[in-house]
Length: 107
Image 1 (tube, rainbow, N blue to C red):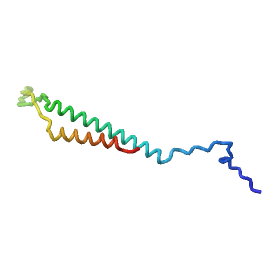
Image 2 (image 1 turned 90 degrees about the vertical axis):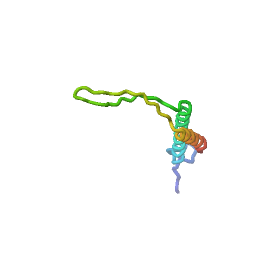
Image 3 (image 1 turned 120 degrees about the vertical axis):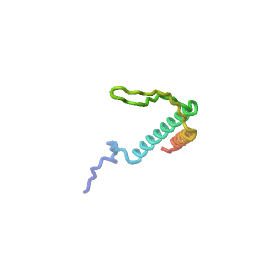
Image 4 (image 1 turned 90 degrees about the horizontal axis):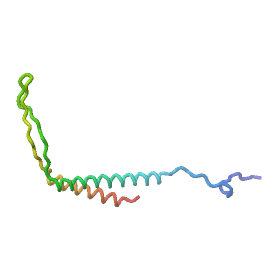
């Protein structure tokens, strides 16, 4: 009387593949987030190490002292600044935390 025409379970055809579900998309997003955390952490740690190794930096600054008509007097001076220790410690700590979080995120 009633004949079933569904070939899904007949064994003659392979079941159709469904598009990737939300779980695969979530996994891909977690992997991207993990990679971004690791890269950001490594960059911050490298900046912190550079600040420890070279805590001062120098630059040239030109200041215009006077301008009379087309003539102008400028002074060029060398300036040396120091990177604050708190900024160096913060870079290292935050970078280390990001690297550890990136390593611990479950995929």
